Picture (cartoon, rainbow, N blue to C red):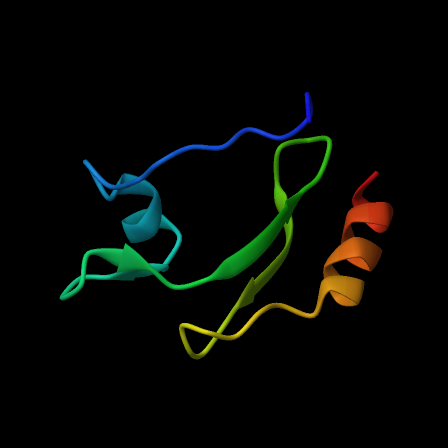
Length: 68
């Protein structure tokens, strides 16, 4: 787990606002998956349309392998 960083956006909602994930009324984030390439650019983004939905993990892994 040394390559995973877990953060909270609760206090400032900065991430949710910048990346289009914030549900303002509830002050929570839509589930989303992002892959960041070695250059620090988002190479893949998927936003789930409903709160309980999960991303297509196969698609996320494929994007991560390409980003490596």
